[in-house]
Amino acid sequence: MSTIERAEVFVASPGRNFVTLRITTSDGVTGLGDATLNGRELAVASYLKDHLVPLLIGRDPARIEDIWQYLYRGAYWRRGPVTMTAIAAVDMALWDIKGKVANLPVYQLLGGRSRDGVMVYSHASGTDVPSLLDDVARFRDLGYQAIRAQTAVPGIGGSYGVRKGVVYEPASTSLPDEQPWSTEAYLDFAPTYLTQVREKFGFGFHLLHDVHHRLTPIEAARLGKAVEDVRLFWMEDPTPAENQDAFRLIRQHTTTPIATGEILNSIWDVKDLITEQLIDYVRTTVTHAGGITHLRRIFDLAALYHVRTGSHGATDLSPVSLAAAVHVDLTVPNFGIQEYMPHVAETMEVFRTGVTLEKGMLNLSDAPGLGVEYDEKAAERHPYDPRYLPVARRLDGSVHDW
Ligand code: CS2
Ligand code: MG
Picture 1 (cartoon, protein in one colour):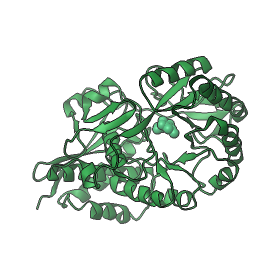
Picture 2 (picture 1 turned 30 degrees about the vertical axis):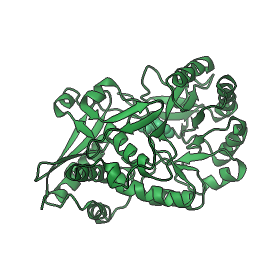
Picture 3 (picture 1 turned 90 degrees about the horizontal axis):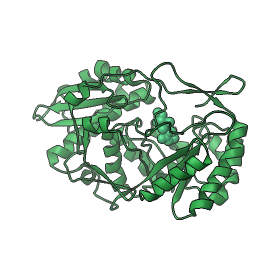
Picture 4 (picture 1 turned 135 degrees about the vertical axis):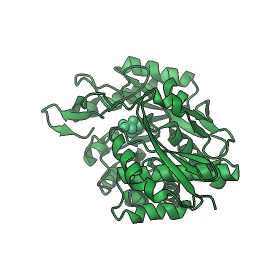
C-alpha cells in the first residue's frame, strides 16, 4: 500500500502571500493544496506543520473521506477559518494525488463534466463614475459575460473594491489601512452608478455588486429594492453573515438575488441560509470551506433548495485553489458563476496551471489530478511578506465591518 511519506508547507510571496501544502506518497506521487488565509497566513501554516502533518505520515492517501473526518472530528474543536483552511489543503492535495494515480483529471473523478466551460465574473472598478464606465467597457471588450462594478463613494475618500493599480490587493504591508465609511453616502450613491452602467451598456451581460458586509438588514433591503430595475445578477454580502436569520428580513423586501459565503467555512455556517432559501448563491470556497470533499457537500445541499454556486475567487486564493474550484464548477449540476481575477506574472511563475480563459469562460487541460505544479525554486525568490487587510471606520471614528 502506498502511504503518505512527507507533507511540506511553503509560505512565499510571489506577488502576494500564499501558503501551499505539498504531500508526497511512498510511490513518489505529489499533491498540492492551497492553505492561504489572507492576513493570517502563518496561523494556518503552523496548524498544518505542528498539528496535521504528524497525523498524516504513514496514512493511506486514497482514504480522502476518512482522513477528512479524522482531522475534523479528531480536532474536537469545530469549524473556523484556520482549521477549515488547513483541512481543505490536505483534502485538495489528496484529490490531486488520487487523480494522478488514476491518470485522470479530478473533475472526471467527481462525475465528469456537466458543462463545456465555467462562466466567470471579472472586477470593474473606478475612483469615480467615468473611470468605472471605462473599466466596464474594457471588460466587455475582453469578452467577459459577467462584470462586478464598484466605485469609490464621493466625499468619503474611498470604498471597498476599488483597484489602485493594475491589480486589486486590499492588504497592506504595514499595519492595517484604516478606511473611512459612510453608510448614508454609499446608499445614496451606489444605485445611481449601477443605473448608469445599465444605461450605457444595456442588459446584455450580467452585472454584480459586492456590499462587503457593510449594511444592516433593513439598509440592505432598501438597497436591494432601489436596484431592482438594474437586474443585478447578485447583491453580495449585503450584511454580515454570522447571523443567518438577518437575511430573512432582506428577502421579505426585495427580489434582488443575494449571494454570501466567502468568509464562511462549513456546511453548518450556511445551513439555515440554504434550507430556508434566504440566499440565491452560496460563495464558500474550496480553500476556506474544507476542500473539495466538504464544498461538494455544501453544493449538494444547496442544489436541493434552488441555491446555485458562486465560489469566491479573489487573487488571495492561489492558482491551486482556482484549479480545484474549476474542477468542482465543471461537475456540479447547480453551478452559478465563478469569481475570477487574474494572478500577476510572478504568481504564475511559481504555480504552473492548466486553467485557461476564453471569452469569459474558464476551462481545464486534461492533465491528471488538479493540473497545477509548484516551482519551489522560483518560490524561494519571494519570501513571506507580512500584510494586513484594512479596517473600516465610520466618520465618527468607530470601527465598522470592512
Ligand atoms: C472580495 C474579496 O472577491 C471578493 O468578493 O470580497 O476580495 C475579499 O475582500 C478578499 O478575499 C479578502 O481577502
Ligand atoms: Mg466579496
